[in-house]
Image (cartoon, rainbow over all chains, first blue to last red):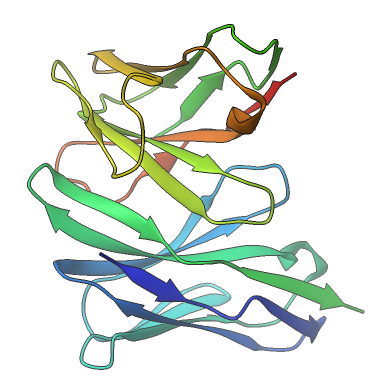
Length: 112
Length: 115
């Protein structure tokens, strides 16, 4: 099976930088994705890493170390609208293609 | 592009009845669709994977006779919760993927309340 661990809650101030870590244990690992979800809404895709290293997309960056089974999401210049839940998800290769297994989720609270 | 819709967005039904939820890819053909379930403040749990024209693959612990999935076309998948009970109340989210893409595009979700 798969398991993913994230901190349950992170609090930061507006304008700051925050890092959300994700460690995983899985077989058939293909890549690590990050999703944002506001209360009552659908998950929205933020970033994807298939190879080791840093991927930068605007204020958001994501890092992956396959040898350490570890990744993180870095959010810079935090804004109040960034308050949401953030999920890491591993893509796993199965007989029917790839499927996603989501982490436990991190509730980010951005304060003034 | 890559918009996924779900209908209805909210539904309240009585215990013992069945409810059908539709998931549509509006501007692309989805060879694979996924159904997830999410409890409040919890993670998304994959229920099943459906490929167009074939039977769905259910995750361990998901009752296939209770959660009927049909993927009749490349733009439509349906989830029917049969003989619903209060414990089936949850947020059901679908996603769709184009052939060989890694990214899944999520629908807005359907909140089911069984009274």
